[in-house]
Length: 133
Image (spheres, rainbow, N blue to C red):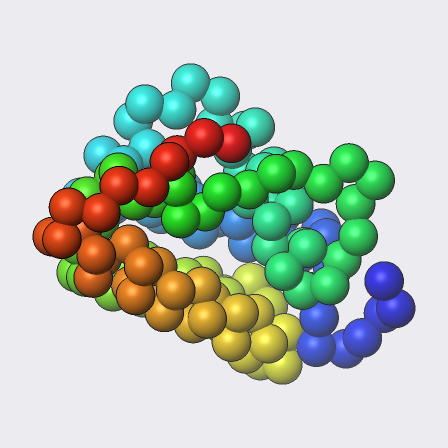
């Protein structure tokens, strides 16, 4: 991937992901969503790969990610998503320069809008989505 000033490096993404998920796991509203994970380091690596690919990065063996299927059965509420967004924004500000943080936050907003539209807004309608992958 060509180096661009406003695109975080893979290492920066990894640092942000680890710092962010430390906050999330310690958060009273969000922490319970992650209690079932036995290998959190593997989860953080998968999320680092996800964000790297979201920003145009290439991987030799990219993970298959079913974001909607994984999040749909979790019972996420709008308040959870708002807390997630606030913690993500805070973490980006703490670890990246403004240009990189804003670039990444644009991606975060797209993902959160998709989660809200497909996961949160449809949960009360009895819609079933597979969480395989």
